[in-house]
Length: 352
Image 1 (cartoon, rainbow, N blue to C red):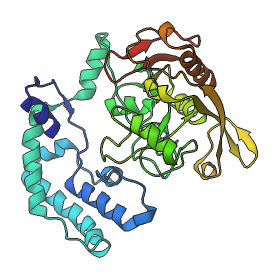
Image 2 (cartoon, rainbow, N blue to C red):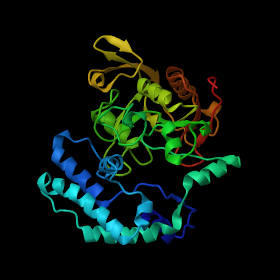
Image 3 (cartoon, rainbow, N blue to C red):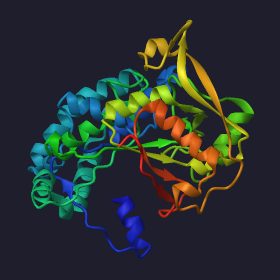
Image 4 (cartoon, rainbow, N blue to C red):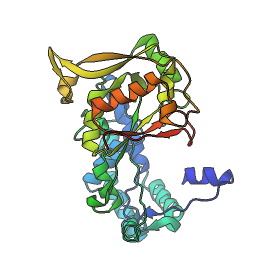
């Protein structure tokens, strides 16, 4: 709601928004618990953004979360649930974290405020999408993070708390899985990560600082936290695994223009696991032992922003794209060579 107000205050026409009447709500105490737990773990923390994600999902699956429709029950029912939740949470707040218990009156007032703000936007999103699909309309589902942050298939436990895999999009949207016809996987032309966890092709020192400074759209820094992202060379092992789990039909290869300063560009094509060379992504406990196996390609040493067709790209740039496509085995059909919406090169892949 704050984001919506921010854009409309700037004169941007209000977008048409529908919020699912089954959506789970992030509560203030979720953010509090996330912050307190990261502080308690100190050097052994998970690198959380402290935005309440893990406590939120813990409550959802413990069946003490809040679906938005519950905000519209009788006030006495809401207050009873607040008291029931506070009874559980206060044990941890007071005895483990040595913090104040939940202010039940303040929480109820927050719920009342939120329910009035959200009321105009609530609807049956699943039914709305079902009708749209039956009318032959195009539906776009957008995910975030990536395969390696998936709690089942990622680098557990250094993962997020919900699935960022495309198949889960059908569950979140309330549509049948067979309705997903195309999966576009966004893959940077180099590697980056926020937070702790295994990162086989990671760079350190001056090389990392240079790539971080030049990377992204104004540098590689976390969108939520502003923390410097960890960066590294492109990892074909992790990317091939990620594409397979996502069911990738198309790869959008982004921030390629960033690499134009390099004389040579290493690409991680395999992992060395104690003398065993593999191109298959291993379980987390083996990743700490993994050493990257690199192949080095020549750079193109020029600016590629503004180029509109694949054939106009420098030869070494095209070779870099084609080499990675062959390594991962999935078609690169879109290439981003700048931050503008127009900085997209469409390409016909031999893999399609």
